[in-house]
Structures are given as C-alpha cells and as structure tokens.
Length: 387
Image (cartoon, rainbow, N blue to C red; front, side):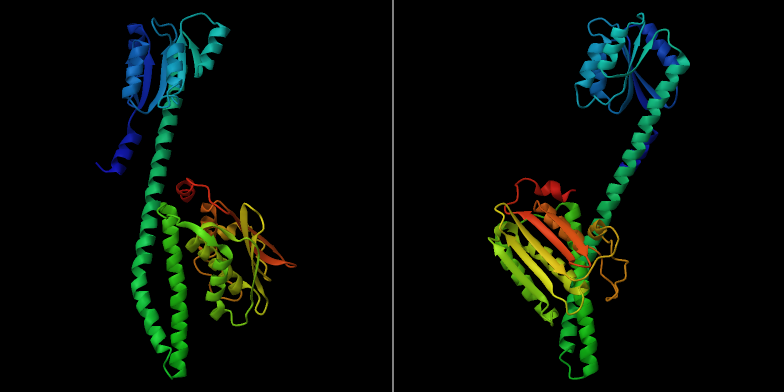
C-alpha cells in the first residue's frame, strides 16, 4: 500500500478513546453514550488491562480513567502513563463517584489530568469534551500529513536539482571547449562572440555548482574533509585565481598573526571565492577590495572582505536566504545569478562552527566578516547540515 494512501486512511480513521472502569455497567453505559462512527472505544476493566491496550494501540486521542479501582487506582495508572515516553502525551480525564474533595482533585491534576468529572456527570458535557479531543487528534493527523507531503516535495526538488545540475555539466563542458577554440579565430567578430559564449558558460557553470552544493547541504550528504590549513595561503590562492578578472589590481590582501587551523580547505576556499567574487563584481569600479585574515586570537580566526559599495536598505539577513537575489536586477550587471552564493557561504561557515556578519555604510563601505574556531568541535557536522 502506498504511503499516501496509508496517510489518507489514517486521517479518516476514527479517534481512539480509552475508557478504564472496573464496573462493567459503567463501561456499557459509556459505549452507548459515546457511540459514534468518528470514535473507536477501547475499554479496560483494570489498570493492568489498560496498560496492555496502551502497549498494543497507537495514536490514542483521550483516556477516561475511573479513580476508584482495586489493585491499581486511576492516579497510579496516570503516573504510569505519564512516566512512559510513548504514552505521556495522551490527555487524561478522571471520572469519580466520590464526593468533591479538593485534595483529591489536586492530586488528579498533579497526576497529569486535563479535567476532573464527578459522577453522575452531564452526558452532553462529556460528549462535548471527548469531541474536542477527537478533533484535536484529527488536526494533528492533518498536520502530520502536510509535513510528510512537504518533506517528500523537498526531497523530490532536491533530487531534481542534483540530477539536473549533474546532467547539464557534460554539454556545458563541450560548449566551453568550442568557445575556447573559437576565441583563437582571427576574425574579431568571431573572437568577440566566442568570448561572450565562454563568459556565459562560466557563469552557468558556477550556477550549476551552486545547485549541487545546495542539494548536498539540504540532503545532509556532504562530508567535511578537515585538515591542517593556513587560511592566509587559501586566501592568496583565491586572490590569484581572480587576478585575470581583476585587471585594475583592486584586490589588496592583509595578514596578521598565526592563520593556521583545522578546516575543510575546499569549502573555505569556496567561502572566500564567493565573498571576493561578490566584492569585485558589485564594488565601485576603480575602488580597492580588501581581504584581511586575522589570526591574533588563540581560539578563532577571522576573515573580512570589504569593498567601497553599499548594500540596499533591506534587511541584510535577506542576503543569506537561498534565491533571495535571483529576481533582483543589479545597477551594473544584468542579473546577479541564482542568489545561492551567500547562502552557501553562511552554511559552510556554520558547519565549521563559525558565523558570518555583514556591515554596510557610506563611510566604510560593505564588509563581510567570517569568524571560525581554529579547530572545529567534533560530532556536530551531521546536525548542522540538517538545520
């Protein structure tokens, strides 16, 4: 049977009501009172019989417990129900024929009761209370179904993104190779157009890479390769990679202190690459871009990337949301891309146990600051990827 059909049948199933009373006539009366196609009555004549039902049955909406029973009274049964993880969330209503006793009532609420009814009770009131808890369970089932549907949709979307990104790589590689070969043509128009094709293919390649990284992050399949790394050397390597795009030599790098630590070098290189690429792309032309690595603190390392531009007045937190900038037009560039770069930056920094901050003003420009511990705490990677 398909999971969706099982879930639908679970939503339509009657709400289970457990009734515990040592008097058979009371159980018969309760069956008649609560007879409804929307309810399934489970009856027990003792506390031990009730515990057997609780071990056997799942998803009980409400338990009606008689207080005065031999061997195990309702209070003792309630304590056992509340003491087990599997059953502690079941709402309890106590029923008693004893006279009103504040101490007894207090003990009932202390044992976890949501209500305390004295016999003879109003049948309409009891049916109303049972109906409320039955409806609450139906709502919980609907919510559980919606959560399951959303989870399945998310997994399908992530699988689709990963497959799409992977299958797009091969034709894109062929396009890049052809564009590189055409760029050597002596015809200026052909060389110019092949250069445009090559630039576009590189941008598309970056988008595909971001989609793959996002799919790995969301699925929790990414594993950090932690090793001893000099973060300043990683920064210098990334700055050198951007040198052909930085024709004006705007990038200035500074290093202070001991910049060595234990990181995933590839992931931190991507963090620096995304931040530096954004700073060069969106910073004012002719103005410097400063990359600084600070290793003066004994326990943490800091990286900052600054340009002289300013951010929009919108909430800076929006910058780190996936696809947040995919529909925004930039004043200098036609399209900013998928809007995944800064989201991936934040996630990679988070899984290293660090954080990313951003400050922007007309006086100081825009600075993205990354702070990470020199040695990542063990045992947190899987949990962080699932956040």
